[in-house]
Each structure stands twice: as structure tokens, then as C-alpha cells.
Image 1: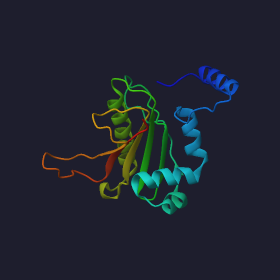
Image 2: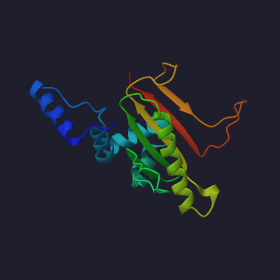
Image 3: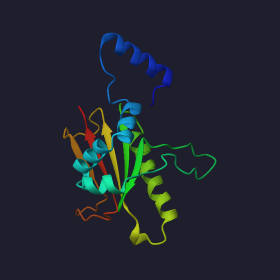
Image 4: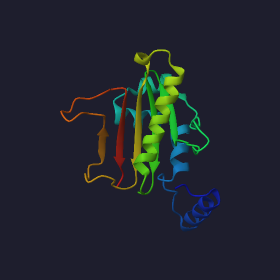
Length: 172
């Protein structure tokens, strides 16, 4: 759950008083870094996905992080960082704490990205690859690995589609 602007300002004031820095694990800090530091964004994305830094730097286009609401019962959904480069869409989600429903919420965001792309695409084969990158300030799964990658597979390990995937980066 995001903190309020007022609470964030209180935290910043207290950290400054102590001579400390604001942790980059706060959504607003990491969002600002990802939006305003193109080389950092390219390095981070490239290191996690193997998409070249040059492609990211040369074809980067920021996307609207607010998704289309499909019915009156649906709450608004807003991603942390969403951008496209040639052939790819990247959705970064920063998760500072673990809570029930977190995976399902992030799945809903990934689904919204894919649905929005389908609405704008004339040919399914030309859809870009969508990669959601979850940066967690905790371990979510039983595995204590710092980097996990998920794809839709059957019981034999055959990948259903290479048009989407999820990466989890565990900072702990």
C-alpha cells in the first residue's frame, strides 16, 4: 500500500534531520529514478532481461500507467512504471511489503497491459513481448533466490507463449 504524500514528507524530514538518505525502495523515489535516469533504466532493464541497452535507449517510449476501466465495479489500476521499446513492453512494480493478494493484483496489471495492447493491435502475431518486473523488498516465494523468472508452462515444461513473462527481483 502506498504511503501518503504528507507521510512521505514527514519521513524525508526525519531522515534529513538524521543525515540519512531516502531509501530507493519507496515507490515515488524509484519511479522518479526510472523516469528521469535513462541510462539507469536501460542498465537495469537490460541486466534483467537481456534486451540491449542500445535498443532501450534508442526506442524508449513512456506509456500511460493508468489502465482502462472495463466495468463500473472495477477500481482504477495504476502501474508504477510502464514503457515500451521496439518489440517489448516493460511493466515495473515495486513491492515494499508482502500482503495477501499482491500476486493477483500484479497479475491483473499484467492482464491489463496485454488487453490494452490487443485493443490497439491488428495482428496477434505482431504483439510485443510483455515483461513484468516485480522488485520486492522481501522474499515472496519459498525460494531464497534473488532473481526468479516465471512463464506459462504445461506439466512437461513446454512454454505456452513467449509473448509474456514475469521476473521477480528479491532485494532482501
